[in-house]
Length: 243
Image (cartoon, rainbow, N blue to C red):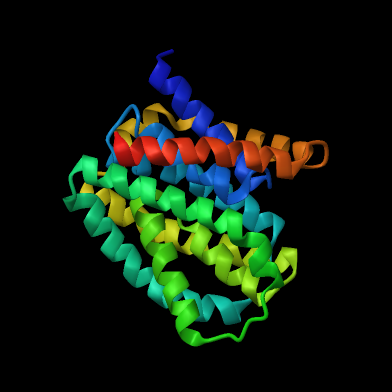
């Protein structure tokens, strides 16, 4: 088994861990940047899409009917528009430029994590344009780098919804975007069926990661784990921006 295949298998497992509640957006943001070290960004983003869809399906089952349609109706339209824009960027921009965009989206994740506690305490007055902006950034990040969670999560934290409603809403939101990305990625060659079929077995590692993630959340300090991942993400961000 090649080193590249082992890394892809590890990525599949890490996606499962993040869907299982360990690491959240920070761990999820590391996926495409790690893969971009061994393959073009377009291929790195495309090859992880089936893994993300597998995780979405498992999360949807766990949080069935826990989503809030009010937020989906206001967030999704802008996200759908920016997904098309992001896919066009993924198709047309040089790989070096895409790597720097990956670095910027990684830093956005860092900024979200460092400000998340302050967001929870903030006295907030909702505005429709906040949702449109958050949805647009989330859709763009999801299409270009599979890193759309920070903008969406920051907006939802301000709404102060329950954890289950948050998880249900985030699952449907990114599930819709990921399903839309399948035909778009196929059309630009980012998702290559023959490569995916040769690696389909790695999808089995997603549910394994989900189960272990659920188990570890109850036994590890999530805060300590996230801080460790955050330090690694900062390093990866600057490596992408300066490399």
